[in-house]
Length: 128
Image 1 (cartoon, rainbow, N blue to C red):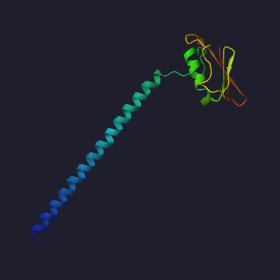
Image 2 (image 1 turned 30 degrees about the vertical axis):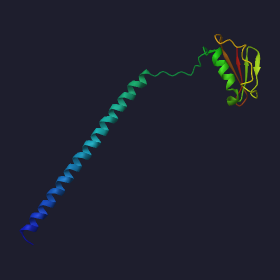
Image 3 (image 1 turned 60 degrees about the vertical axis):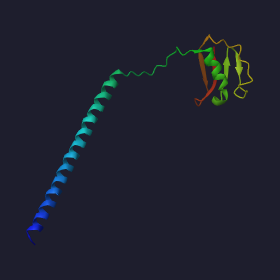
Image 4 (image 1 turned 180 degrees about the vertical axis):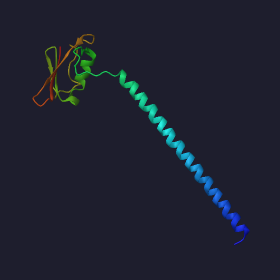
């Protein structure tokens, strides 16, 4: 073993130590930035939660225009429920393209009534 071998070994050790220190510093920065981002996200979520209001009350001001009622009739096959509009029943088995919806005013406001069976499944939708 000569002086050259000791110099090579010293260079390899110094390069290895430098890479190790750089890795430790980079790892610390990654974890530090992640912790900072978690704090920011947590504080943003806390601020948003103060603006949220929830209630179990169902609003009764649910109204639809005649255009929305007509659209419901044209999609009657997808919902598989009967629809009653001002006493006129539209069966779930009708062809939506063949039905006459001219009696439904486009500008009139309709209030829905939902009829459900004992299991809670929607069976009839009434607009009046």
